[in-house]
Image 1 (cartoon, rainbow, N blue to C red):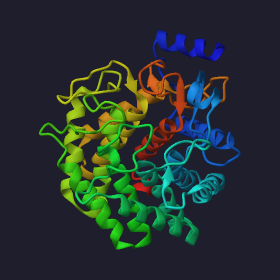
Image 2: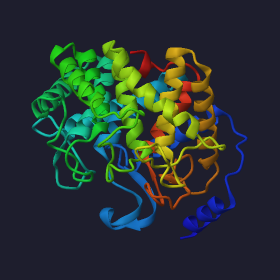
Image 3: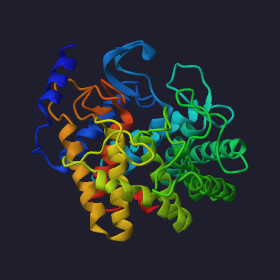
Length: 384
């Protein structure tokens, strides 16, 4: 309770300015991700660190390893290793990829919950781990990773409906039916095509992107695009959708997919607040429906804006992305005595907001690190 009280009081007092450099903030986020990896005995990355007891995980502190997010954390570690020359991060990335292959389901799928929960195949989770296996195979040429990616890609192919959507094998922790943010899983399948050369995976990805275009409204908003409430989707899932379509458009050389993401990203630009943040949810008219900020969604939106700057040269995207990064840097505690908090990124700001309240999810730190890596130019992840 001491940690919780201290952090709540700080959020009530307002965010302090940051005096540390971008590199110091990046190093702190990567250090926290290493501690999350160590917390499981390096058997995947701990899902989150919680300041409050949570019934689902039967406790506070570090939660069990999460296959889905470990999968896309892999490439962040490879990118950071390339930036810093630190072999430890490359070694950890390979450890994560081997662990993912060891816990892959017989069907080729990835389970939709943390380790220790009943296994059930999940489309979104499988797509996210494809990023890790594709990158690990490119880095190592180890057929273990190629074989895992092919099995996962074939699972995605078999589960896809004729119109390109995935309606089966949704996560038990999200609403059933179409989840438009599966575009980020389609991007994962496209990466599997790129890494393995298996042409059928390109077609799987393209079909899903085509389907997503039919669910975008005239103002750029995406329907059926939330974990729990499609009427006012989270910025997190809207950003997943933008990321998938933007990078899918680049990878498949299809401008229509990229332009779809750009329309949504453009709609968010005038909604950025003076401190650099965005609200955590939006309705179909892009009206904010909450005041709190979903920090993961903020980081993802920064990534989209910075990528659009790289692709178009339009400085409005750069300026918005940098302002967002500075806001996120202010929310990160570099000097906290608790190693589960130091360097982490909260679910929400303030801490008690509606997304991941009172906890620090590993994907928040991952996307924050990716956004900071992009400040220096195209990362290896986006150059491939």
